[in-house]
Amino acid sequence: MFDVLVRAVQSCADAGRSAGTNPFADATSLWIGLHSLADLSPVSPMFPWPEDVLDRLVDRLALLT
Image 1 (spheres, rainbow, N blue to C red):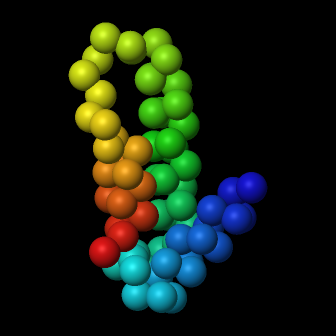
Image 2 (cartoon, one colour):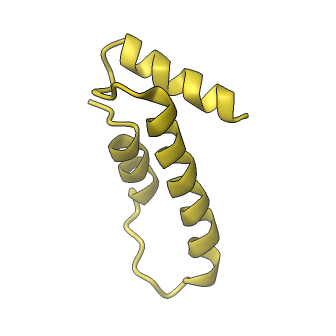
């Protein structure tokens, strides 16, 4: 599955939708961030999570433009 994520990030870069230059490193950051969000969300229900936190996380870690 990780290779699918790397290819998706590479596709974004190839299409000019990502400023990233290292798809493996960007996908690794994205993978870590998504897992962290998945782990933290259920155990921190009182935290004021922004409604668009997932979009913000993906946009920033994949360097989407």
